[in-house]
Length: 397
Image (tube, rainbow, N blue to C red; front, side, top):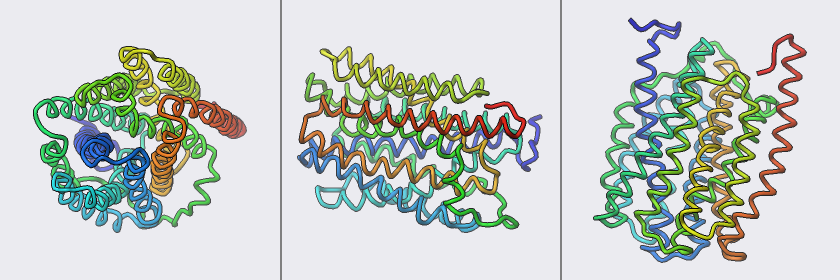
């Protein structure tokens, strides 16, 4: 019999719900985020700037919902918005197939907007367990599920693109948003009836939160660029096919999956060393992409970059779960997710102009000094967290 962990529901039941809804949301979201740049460039014949802009639009929508709406709602209101958003997501997703060069813009925005109500609440639900080890194991399983969806999704895309056009694949993937809507009624939300409202300023002052943000930015900045222009870079430089590009992303997400499996099996006590290692690997991977002279070399560095992709996000959500009470985690998770989306909104827009100015290859090189600055800021916040825990008589984690 599976032990009830004090939350009124068994650990196994929570795993099943979190895994299923996470897989469906992330698998479908990643599908349209990786295919929209290809559709924009090769179906609607947009230039680099518009390719970056339409990718940024989805992130803008997600940011608006997460930062300005979801973070300010109480638990009961968030549940209603979550279920409504999942219904809208199921309705709008098939419309990608019917889109043209004009209508695709509002469709992308709406799909991104409702995502801002889905992902932060899934993170918060995964972090509701009172026992720290069970909570961090479930958070690691949640992030592992993200990686599984990012392996299976692109692999399925690659298979489908061998015999059907880009836009038609959206009809197949529309099954996932329907699953999200069905499962939305079963997701748990925290009891906030007796808790005070947490302000954003309180969250931002927390060193564990700031460390989580700097950590995720060391990878989100290059990842936003890779997601938008990685496939186009491989196709333009080495002449590979649509199918090969999607399989390249599948291999990237496979190594991400391996690193998250390690965290799910054995949640880390010391998260700071893994954060530093991830930054180092990211820098090496970007240098490798710049210097690659064959597709096989790029593939090898994409495999390498999958490891920090796998580590950074779970390490950040674990840092937040250790730094905030249950009642405060929604505000922290919503603000954290909105910052991620802000980066996702700005980066494709900026990178589109950057690519137009200096070309794809050297745009990757520009990212490296930015990451090193973030490494310095991350190290500072890590030091503050450790000093704070030592002063409280606890060993640093």
